[in-house]
Amino acid sequence: MKIAIGNDHAGVETKNAIVAYLKGKGIEVENFGTDSNDSVDYPDFGHAVGTAVASGEAALGIVICGSGNGIAMTVNKHAGVRCAVCWTKEIAALARAHNDANVISIPARFTAVPQAVEMVATFLDTPFEGGRHQRRVEKI
Image (cartoon, rainbow, N blue to C red; front, side, top):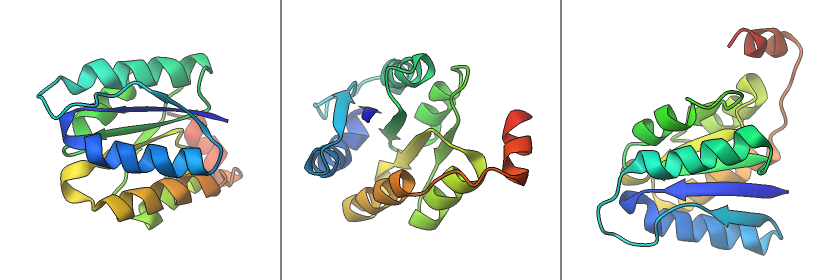
């Protein structure tokens, strides 16, 4: 499995921890994010992740910015991408199980790094339930 990850300047530390976790699990990661704390524009990185997921180049995506909102809005502009802003592992599980989210957005300024890694682990381990949720996803 290949995962696309993108972040702005607010998410460098969080991204680095998540990438280390994913690589430790043997997961291929394509880093579209910045590695600098210098101010950058989150849409540049969100569009790269959105393109990778929409095209099938990546199975899933992870995006990170200060609030998680701006980069999620950007990624969601891509057809077939369902990005959910998550702030707990329970929200991450529901995003996958009920919404078939294929991108998780993490608010770096409001989420501790260990919590962010835990959310990613939950996101990856939770399957889509289908059933009544499939009908709803098809209406998106």
